[in-house]
Image 1 (cartoon, rainbow, N blue to C red):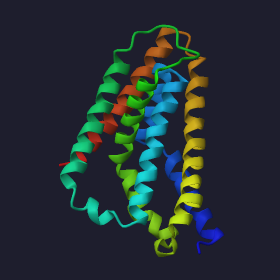
Image 2 (cartoon, one colour; image 1 turned 180 degrees about the vertical axis):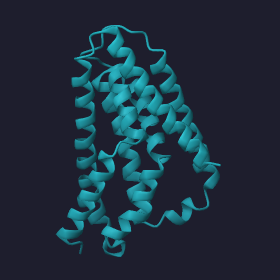
Image 3 (cartoon, rainbow, N blue to C red; image 1 turned 90 degrees about the horizontal axis):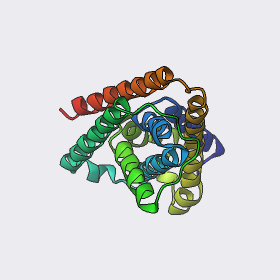
Image 4 (cartoon, rainbow, N blue to C red; image 1 turned 30 degrees about the vertical axis):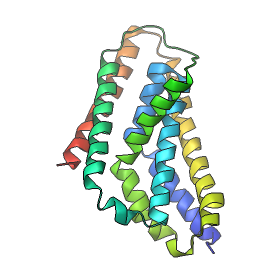
Length: 208
């Protein structure tokens, strides 16, 4: 049986890893600034699904399978990196206009944006390292049952990532309220675009 100490260690480690900005949360902020809160949450949903998949891979031994799927993982890496580059380009070329305070998107758009979030998580080295290497250090994997995985670990993972993601999304929304000038908007859009482009280029180098 997993102890409370192990769960607290897992939750703390996951929260710290999520708070440190990476390609995923950078993309969430960019989506929120560029399309509104709903788009930010759509991307966040895909990021969280990717984390849950990696959590499951680590627990049920699918790391061994992943070792034999290097080509597929490289395709995912390239796809995610190209998506980030496209998003960076879109932000750099973004027309300066009043930012949205509310929005709505179709179910299809939500699914497409969520899928891009999933792809980003699956290609994020930080996420891979956490679930494949760090997770076994804080939780004894041989003590995890399907019941513990489904009723404890998944809810904890989902709650922490949702909370951290909400902080980033609401922070981006709050910041957007102060971006009334065209110059301020251009700075924030292009600054975010440069960060996303740097993250994408870093991902591409890791596939070499």
